[in-house]
Length: 370
Ligand code: NAD
Image (cartoon, rainbow, N blue to C red; front, side, top):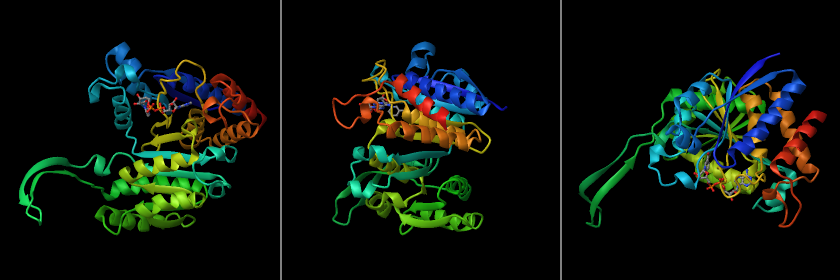
């Protein structure tokens, strides 16, 4: 029997409701698989500001670092909207990413066939479902490069004075590219063995370095079928033939944009899980893509499936239990196939739906049958 230490950060709004569901599911995994999960609950976000005066108390980061994996709900809400940037609940997310060295963000965009009505795409484009994993570099590139403003003396070609110029620098080194590519290749090996590297190599020097490093790393993964795609083309192909993508690996900014686009194809924000990973052997952080949904907090109607699916990613990527992760995903699919829905994913207004606790029980009961 292996013992796994999970740091749980419920956060704000519906965060406590959805993380409680995921923990119940993990407990069911423990009962069935003979492993033990111990949960240590710590604070971050708005609740930590109100209780401890800061969005990410030191104790939270220490507990996270000492765990095998971190499960996060969501942070933020209207109560804290007027605070300055680094005092806001969201600062906790940046602090956790930095403190845990999380450089890879994995977002799954899975359109369960049962929910294809929710997709904004034409039914024939999504009839076989969609299952895309976007691996986004999280700590480099233009979001972290040199930036600034300069008053320019020069003029444009037509003689207009330039005025102030602003710049943001995109910068990647080989080591950063190689480690994110490895996350992409290793993920592809666990899936359908197809990897698309998305870049803008017809223009950007950083993209050309990404391609060069990919050529080197791919020799270690002969089973993985690799292709390169310009980001403008990728954004079109995602809509035209989403089922042809397996794993996409890309830079921070391109990943930011494409992961939202891919998520939108599924049409249900309450269904999208994510993982953020650092160096192998260090704790990864798992969280739903959605926010704290203050409009429905405390009503018992939040959809916990994104968080439950995030726990499935945790089983796969941090705890070495991919088969149990796959069973959780299958259990979710079976629950949907039986017609059970939460309020956000009912086909039409007025349809019957289950609350957070009830749908969690359904997932556990399906899992126990597998
Ligand atoms: P949101 O994702 O919280 O909500 C958008 C809409 O989707 C709302 O109508 C909400 O009710 C619904 N929704 C979201 N998750 C749901 C679920 N699991 N089940 C059912 N319905 C769900 O986004 P928002 O309203 O823009 O942000 C609310 C707060 O969350 C803000 O303070 C924002 O900063 C924060 N936020 C946090 C994170 C995070 O912690 N990672 C991410 C995004 C937003």
